[in-house]
Length: 128
Image (cartoon, rainbow, N blue to C red; front, side):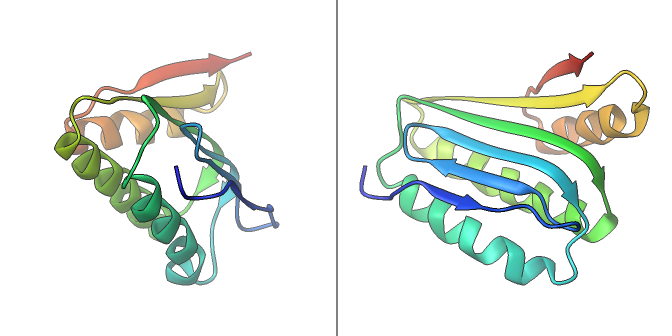
């Protein structure tokens, strides 16, 4: 795997992003970017490079406390891209874990919508 690990530190409006060539794509925090395109460009570049030689299992971990409509669009596009690239290399496995808290029905609903729009099964994991 040629791509190095990339970590994008969180801000008050953007989540922490960990992109690990061992097969981890982890997004944690708040996704309300002022410029979503600028925020997602380095993530997409890393994903494009990573999928030239992905790990046996790629695990996408999403744990967001809040996401606005622009963030939703870009995140959905990113997951769609991962799904499409992955389907071309179908000998590898991939998992999407969507975390939510008991109190946050909105995030559970958003994950359910993403899963159905993409026609990809998500693992919904309740955080206590």
